[in-house]
Image 1 (tube, rainbow, N blue to C red):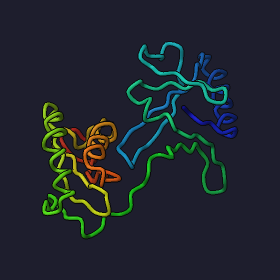
Image 2 (image 1 turned 30 degrees about the horizontal axis):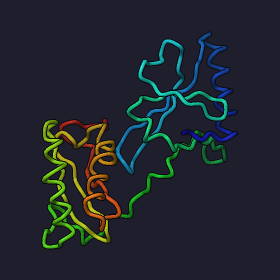
Image 3 (image 1 turned 180 degrees about the vertical axis):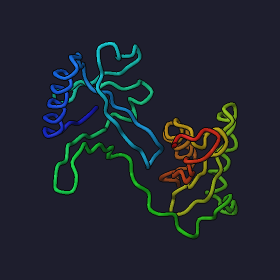
Amino acid sequence: MVELSGAAKKRIETLVKDQVEKHQKDIKGLRLTTSGTIPNVEYALAFVEEDKIEAGDVSVEANGIRFYMESRNAKFLEDIEIDFVENLEKSGFKIENPKVIKPEPLSPEIPENEADLSDPVAQSVQKVLDSEINPSIASHGGHITLIGVKDQVAYVRLGGGCQGCGQASVTLQQGVVVAIKKAVPEIRDVLDVTNHAVGSNPYYA
């Protein structure tokens, strides 16, 4: 589930040893957390003491190090790769998910507002949004707008309660993407162009 390099393991063991010696705390492992929305996802590591283990935590071991994560994030974090990089420019942990693909910049041909529904593929995507997705997220005050379809990619914008929500990436990847690609096989990817720094539930400070 988690791949840990030798360099990262060595650094973690050093940090844990220092933490135990300085604070006399029993460290059981590290908590792996995620924030932000795809593709701008950020990861973080934190020490886990015995009394900080939650009942619903998923626990995995990688290269002799125990990692804990919330069950709702376990699927998203299952392919995480953790390394420790140290050079003249910087040093620190490098955490990546190889399945998270950085999108290319939006083409200027993609409209700023709602999509042109004269395209049959765009019509099909809009139908999925209207009949399946938006009704299911309306109870949370959210809605999703189709911005455009180009090169088999559907560009969407999240609004209402979904804009800035910390679970927006989960909603997108586990719900929206799956539903659209299943109903419209011409679509190979769905990209979120939302500015999640603002909104009714801003996730970023």
